[in-house]
Length: 394
Ligand SMILES: *Cc1c(COP(=O)(O)O)cnc(C)c1O
Image (cartoon, rainbow, N blue to C red; front, side, top):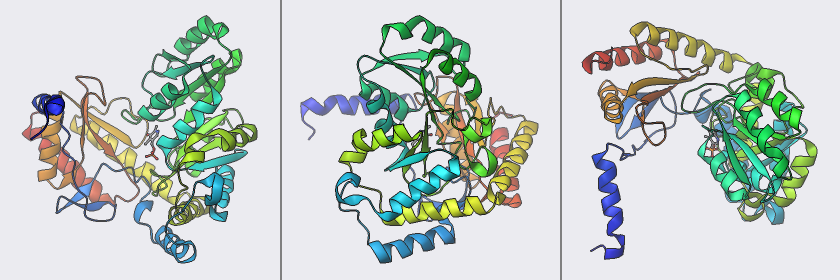
């Protein structure tokens, strides 16, 4: 029997179920790729962040295996005590070179990177200017810092300008933070304009490049490269778990910032290092990206084809400018039904519902990858067309 003090949880769970908001998590039984085994069934995968197909790439797997042979499996320490491997330092140097920044600090995840970066830079006497739709890990990082949080309108430099002008003087210093690519809509922050605004007032700048890394810019060098802002944005947050196909995160940017975070970033000081296997796989990913733009180019060609065909079929793909393709459906229940229909047609794409996105904007979020072949895309479009007709969406 559940004790009385926990009854509220049963009520909460039932309420989520009644509202169609209870998330039933599916189980994957294979490596990530264009086709995967989900709950025992082989389906076309349209919803993982494996943009370039690197999650199951032979070169990354070989690098990880060799690293295990040499270094074993566990780090056995935090980076600042006995956990810093030569591989970690090599990855930090290589990432910095790839992105055209001074240096980088490698941490356990992109989520962690936001928590690691924000707290040391601002505190109670300071102020954060943050986009209304920033990622949960940015929001949590902001809250943990104890600084005042002021929210500007989504992707709106004028709104940011007004907010900074009216408030900055009451604080010691300010930091403007934006997602680069917004993960639910696939739209891109106006980084050049935000930079101009922040620079005008002497506010520090930070961009989370989780969905831009390996996607935007020359050969996937990220959003700062896309806008030609090298050396201007103070901090870039990177994840190795999306286009890079592995796991881990980094804070990249100016030397003085990385030097300071190495002394102060709490996840770096108090949580164990990333494993050698993951680190070696990340290095192999950078090797591949530096050697050729082929994968990035293929991902973009797939994206353009898929989006154009979806629009021809009559679907609303919102304001996306990237491979993140929201298929807007409205109510939560419709998106959930749609996802189940797609699964019947052998396509795996999860619904995204409130509170992850605003009410009335429930959607299927499609993630296009270089791993998809022409026939995969064709089959995917067919599944969308069938499900769309069956549910009266198109
Ligand atoms: C996915 C994501 C993260 C988290 O990255 P992980 O490496 O998976 O922890 C952080 N920020 C943004 C904007 C993301 O989309």
